[in-house]
Length: 504
Ligand SMILES: Cc1cc2nc3c(=O)[nH]c(=O)nc-3n(C[C@H](O)[C@H](O)[C@H](O)COP(=O)(O)OP(=O)(O)OC[C@H]3O[C@@H](n4cnc5c(N)ncnc54)[C@H](O)[C@@H]3O)c2cc1C
Ligand SMILES: NC(=O)c1ccc[n+]([C@@H]2O[C@H](COP(=O)([O-])OP(=O)(O)OC[C@H]3O[C@@H](n4cnc5c(N)ncnc54)[C@H](O)[C@@H]3O)[C@@H](O)[C@H]2O)c1
Image (cartoon, rainbow, N blue to C red; front, side):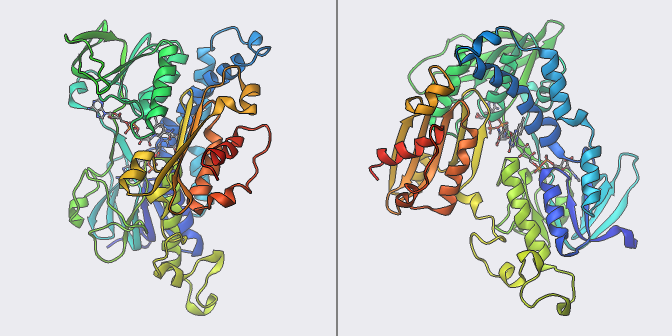
C-alpha cells in the first residue's frame, strides 16, 4: 500500500513543456499534482530542440538581414564568430541545468518526483530514480502521459554513432563535412545552421520534396536558398550503407529518379563526412511505460480524443498530451493541448465541497457543466488540432503556415480557391532588404468565404503567421478581413493584396 505522500490527485509523467503546463493548469482548483521526470525538467524543447536550435540559427539570420541593407552591409563584412555563437547557445540552453525550471515547478505548488515511471496497474505507477530504488505512486483521479518523443534512427546508421537532433543542437565543435539525412524540419533547420557555422553540408533527401508537409513552393524556396549558400541538396537519395573509421563516416548513397523527371546518378555514390545527422522523424516515448498492463501497445502513440483522453482505456482516468500522442509535434500545439487537458481535470475533479463554490461555475471560468458538454471550441476541447495548426520553420527563408495546404483542402472536398502574392512587391519589402524574395498564399473555402490555410515564405515572416491563425480559427469572413487594416509599410499589407487577388 502506498504511503500518503505517494498518493496524488493527478500524476503527470514527463516534465517537458507539455507536462509542466498540464500540471500547472490541473492544480488550479486545488488538486494535488505530482510530476515525474527522470531527466531535465523542461524536456526536449529547452535543452535539445526549439531553444538551442533557434539560438544556432539566429546569428546567421541577423547577419543576412544586415547584409541585405546597403549601408548596414558595410559593417558586417566578416564571418560568424563560431565560439561566440556556441557560447550564446549554451546560455539559451541554460547550460543544460534545470534549476530554474525546478524552482518554477516548486513555486507553482507541484510535487516533482525524480525517476522513470512505469504503470504497474491502472492509476498506479512504479517510479524509479537513477539510484535504483523504487516507489509506488498512485493517482486518485487521473494520470496524464506527456513523455514526448525520441529521434528515429534507421538501422543502417546503428553502428556509426550518428548525430540526432540532440547532438546537433548541443554540439561543441563544428564538423568540417556534415551529411544530413532527411528533408523535414530538423534537416532543413540544422543544414541552415551548420552551413552558417562553416560546415560543408550535404542534405540527403529520400523523397523528391524538401519540407513535404508544407506547400511545394515553400520547400522549393528553402532548397534553392540552401543551394545558393553552397549546401548540396540531393533528392531521391537513399543511404544503403554506413561505416565509421578514423577518417569519418563513409556512406553509400543510391540516387533514384525523382518525380519531376530529373534522374540521379546511376552508380551508387560514396560519400565521406565527419558527422552524419539523422533527421528522419520521431517516435513516441511509450516503449518502457508498462502500457501492456493497461492493454495498450508499447511503442505506439497514445491515441486521444479532443479532451486528450486516451482511447481504449475505460474509467476516464488516463490522458495524454504532446508528442507522445502523435497528434501534435510542436511545443506550442502541445502546450495548447496541455491547457485543455489541465482545464478538463481541474473542472471535472474540482476537489472543493459543493457548498464552497458558486453553483455550476468555479473560479477561473472553469465549469463542471461545460466540461461535461462536448462543445467544440470550448476550453475543454482541443478543436484547433484538427484544422488550425500553425508551424514555423526557421530556415532562410523562413516558412510559416497554418491550417490546410491546397492539397489537403482539395482532399477534404472543400470549394478551394487559392490566391498568392509575391512579398517582394510590397512597399515594406523594398525597405526591409534589397531583392527581398518571398511569397504569401491563402487557401480559401469559397463556399463559406473564409481562409482555411495560409503560407508565408520569406525573411521575417514568422511573426506574420499569427494573424492568419486568428483568421482561420475565427473563421473570419473575407468581407470582414477588409476591415483589419495592416500598418504601412509592413509586410502584413500582403493581406490587402491577397484580398484584392481574391476579388473581394
Ligand atoms: C531539433 C528540434 C527543434 C524543434 N524546434 C521546435 C520549435 O522551434 N518550435 C516548436 O514549437 N517545436 C519545436 N520542436 C518540437 C518540440 O521540441 C516538441 O514538440 C516538444 O518538445 C514536445 O514536448 P513534450 O513535453 O511533449 O515532450 P518532451 O519535451 O520530449 O518531454 C517529455 C519528457 O518526458 C520524460 N519522460 C520520458 N519517459 C518518461 C517516463 N517513463 N517517466 C517519466 N518521464 C518520462 C522525458 O525525460 C522528457 O523530459 C523541435 C524539435 C526538435 C527535435
Ligand atoms: N521549428 C519547428 O517548429 C520545429 C523544428 C524542428 C522540429 N520540429 C518538430 O519535430 C518533428 C520532427 O522533425 P523531423 O525533421 O525529424 O521530422 P519530419 O517528419 O519533419 O521529417 C522527417 C523526414 O525524414 C524523411 N525520412 C523518414 N524516414 C527516412 C529514412 N529511413 N531515410 C531517409 N529519410 C527518411 C521523411 O521523408 C521526412 O522528409 C517535426 O514534426 C516538427 O514538427 C519542429
